[in-house]
Image 1 (cartoon, rainbow, N blue to C red):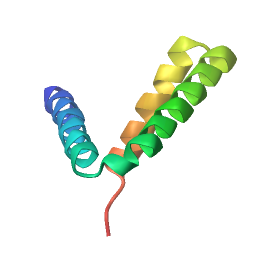
Image 2: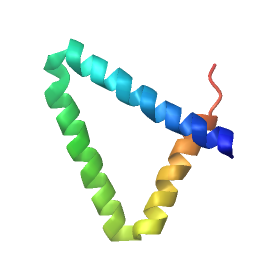
Image 3: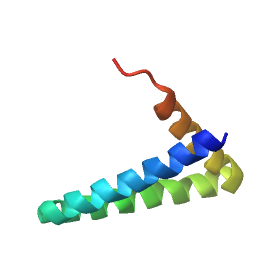
Image 4: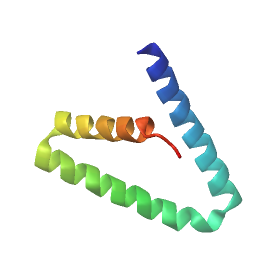
Length: 73
């Protein structure tokens, strides 16, 4: 469990570092990034209204587990 949490935190850190480097190197993708954030927030808020807080968090965790456990070819 500790290994999973450490891997999860490191993955978030890597995502943030790569994202900040990409946004610095390619400033023209800034509007696209803003649009993605708006769409993600809208989807999250719709899920909160429809299912509630706990099921929404469980759905998000389940998606991360599915993506993380998929075998790469």
